[in-house]
Image (cartoon, rainbow, N blue to C red):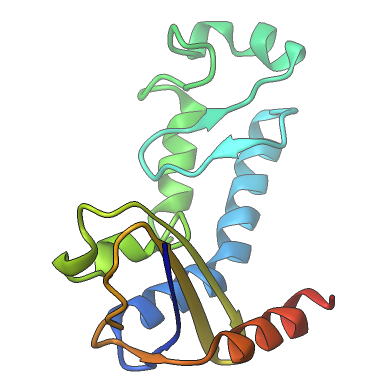
Length: 160
């Protein structure tokens, strides 16, 4: 098991995508709340997909929207009014989910199992990889840091 601690460079795609996601979360939630309010959806849990409104329905939602839901009981049919409103509300949201390191990594860690943590303090984006592989190479879009620096930043962020 190897651990890699790093900060992500500001000029990288991962850095830009992470902060696009972070800054867009409030817009996405506001748009979701607007659609839920417009159609009287009680549930406050949804899956973040651009092209389909998927909720964890309450009993009332199940009854109210039965004819608009797909067989899974969670996904609205594509042509339903709530789904159309959802797709329209989400059209300007760039990143529905937090970026995952996997899509940005070089092939050297592919084939290994790893867990990752990605968080920021101020404008610094921190990353830790726990890898089953022996590769400890830091990707070219990051700068290696000591574990103590990483954990100090984590304590600042979590207030622990």
